[in-house]
Every structure is written in C-alpha cells, then in structure tokens.
Amino acid sequence: MSVKYGKFEMPDKIKLDEASQTATFARFIVEPFERGFGHTVGNALRRIMLASLEAPAIISIWIEGVPHEYMAIDGVIQDMTHIILNLKGALLRRLTSGDEPNPREVRVVSKVLDITDEMIEKGGGEYRVTVKDLIKNSDYEMINPDHHILTITKPMTKRVDVRIGCGRGYVPSERHNTADRQVDEIIMDSSFSPVRLVNYYVENTRVGQDTDYDRLIIEITTDGRISPVEALAFSAQIGILHFQIFDQVKTHSILFDKGEMQVNRDRDEILAKLALKINEIELSVRSTNCLATANIDTIGELVVMPESEMLRFRNFGKKSLTEIKQKLDELGLSLGMDLSKYGINRDNIRQVIQTYLQEKLGPVEV
Image 1 (tube, rainbow, N blue to C red):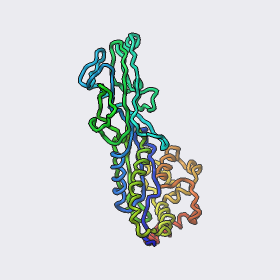
Image 2 (cartoon, one colour):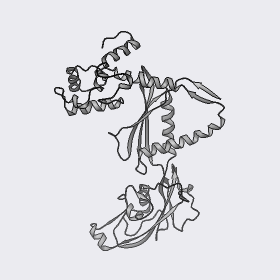
Image 3 (cartoon, rainbow, N blue to C red):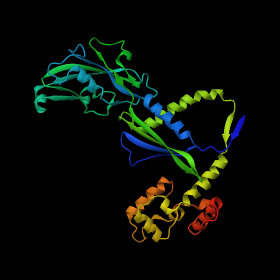
C-alpha cells in the first residue's frame, strides 16, 4: 500500500567548485533541500568522513640492533622517539578491490639500508632517509615519498621492517593486533583517517518564488591518501548502507507528488531566474554599464543572446564575457539558451517575464 505525500524538494544538482579545487581540498554545493535538511545531511556526512573512512598507516617498525624506542642509534642524528614521530607523517595509499582475498591484511615491507661513504659524502656529510627509501617497490603508493625519516652520518647496513595496516580513525599502540610481533619490534600509535577537516555551511536558496530552502556547502580537506571527491563518495555510500536496515520496518511506501514538483522546477524556477534584474547578480560596474547600453535589463534578455553577438556590443570585451558566463553558470543558465520548450524566444522574452511577474506580484513594469 502506498501513501501519497505532497511536493517534497529533493536536491537535483551537486556542483564542484573547480576554482578552489586542489589535490587535497574541494568545495561542493548541493541544492535544494527542504528547510532543515541541509543541516541533517551535512552533519551526517561530516561525522562519517571524519570517523569512518579507511586508509593505510604504519603501525610498527623493527630496526636491526635497536631493542626499544628510548635509545639513540650510532651514526644516526635522530633518536628512536624522533624517528617514530617522523614515521607517523608517512602518507600511504592503497585502494583494494572487492575480489582481493584479504584487503585489510597487515603487510610487512622489508628494506636493507646499505649506506656507503660515497652516499654520505654526496649528501654533504649526511644521508637523509625518506619514505621512498623504506616503502619503494611495495604494494603501496607513496603520497609524500620525500618525507624525512632519519639522517645517517656513518656508513652502515641495517635491515628495517615496516608493518603497515589499514584501519579507521586513531588507534593507540596497545590496541593493535600484534600476535605475530617480532622481538624488538616497536608498535606505534596510528592515524588511519585520511580526512583532516570537514566544514559545512547552510544557506538559503530559491525554488520558484520561495527563498527559504537550504543550499548545502561542504568543504573537505584530506591528507592526500584519498581525494576529497572520494571522501564524499565513500561517506555517502556508508550512510546509505546504514539506512537500508530501516527498510525492514516499512509498512507503507511513500509516493511524492513529482508532477507538481516537476511543474515548479520547469516553470516557476526557470522563470524566477529569467525575471531577475541584471543588477541583482552583482556584476562589475563595467559589465553592468555595457548591458545597460545594450538595453538588456533582465537575465532572460541576456541568456537568449548568443555569445558571438555579445562581443559586438560597444566596450564589451572577453573579460566581461567571462564574468557574465560565470555568473550565469552559478544560476544554472548560459548564453544562447534554447528556451523554446517554455514558449520563450528573443521576440517575446520581455512579454513573458512581464506576464510572469504580474501573476506573482501584481502589475509590474519591465
């Protein structure tokens, strides 16, 4: 049995702010939500991203001839405590496939450090051991291969075993499963979470003539072991899986009035944007004056103009064109739009906007 609900706004677009995007930072804009749902969804995604995403991290180290973490090593500038702190900064990446037998199995990467006089002389009296010296040619991708681990000042040959595991959150050394621990192996605290910071903001957005719907803005900063896009995608999947259990208590299906929703989206929303005045989208003074000279007063009159024709306007250059295209893109519009399915063209755009505003606000001069 189904129960029919009225119109319920659901987000229909997610936008990645490419201007601010880097390898470890991204800003996503999702809209529209019913009032209050921006906080509901944003907070849930934030908590999942900060606590539930997995990544590899070093969980222990064994160095030949080093029995514990409170000692100095002959020929090495750093003591073991400092070396362990440096190891915690090593960032590793490994995405496992579903058909892999033991994707979360702890792995040991062994390396023999064979440091010669020539290598030390070439480095000006010291040889800096980095992440790539310990992890190279393993199953892991190194995000910061040049991250410094220790500095050697005397020729030496030592075997180093690094144990790497995959987990979630922050795990202290005593909670690591070390049943097969070697003699003199030093267990470390490990930070598995690849997400460093998640901020979310909720703003008002417009649907038709209503401006009290939610726009959700999520800013994600990772450490490079996963990308911000992956962090958002993984956390959304984790959230969906947790909600599926509640489907077992479903007694009725809910059907939303999609027809009414579609009508609002196709007519009210697009016409509300087209009816905006040019001065409402915060263009530069130069661009605003150029459009005023061309007798373009509304967004609707602007979007029916092809790009090639815009460049013919007096004092209108590529910089102004780029600015206008960016502002229109933020509204989900573009120059030279085909609005024929709404019965709109260059000849009747003014009359359509005037009729729409009269229906909503009463007699208005356009």
